[in-house]
Length: 347
Image: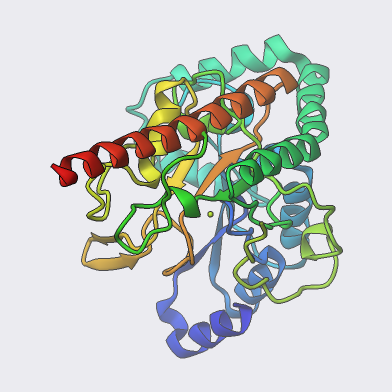
């Protein structure tokens, strides 16, 4: 909300040291309006740091960042090495338009960490070569529409729908409305059948199990394509419902949306995110509603998966096959438990 952001800058004046924007995020959230934020930061003399976790591998995100730097203020952009270069977890690349600022950040670092991330990155880049890295970027883009369409098919097969987030070019999401706790206001149902993942990685978020969290719809003309600044889109509509079995909402079967996440993890599908609505978390005195999501009250539970660099069509197919089977098995287990409870109640 650019207008609200400017109002806060005007209200708080010199008390605002810096703004942190997001260029890369999980669906259903879309990237922030980087151009609009950068212009205001330049106008009011406020520092601007961009969280660009996955963004280096996305052409659209890079264009948006370049434009924000040209027309406004961006002091530093932080991106992950494991998410963008397929190296082990633990490193980050900090870049920016002013060499002096980046140099100052480097000097401020205490330097007591391992040199392994730098070594891993150097070895990987030398092994790939420039052509090899560019091919990986191209392969990822070519798989986006395929992954989005196939994921939507699996979701529809199990009574779920794809989340429409066309401005997010790195993340896909599907609803999990039929996997909620039964008997507690959820829509979980008995019966019925069962990111990019497939290759287990050392960090779930690093490759999102090489899933593709991106909508298949073509990108409209937006600030991300270098056009004029526009207001951010509303909460994405649902078209078409963190892993680890937990509270079943009083249903008695010990199964809710997060149980599906744990089922995927045990099948070597790491990186998918299952978000259950209504969670509240208190951190450093601040209370976060809808913790784990990007809004206080998203209308339903959902699952996301990222289409990150290095994923292959075979891995996409394997992930979707495992997701399909896990969803089917989830419903079979729930139906079996419901049948047992019914039999016990009748005695």
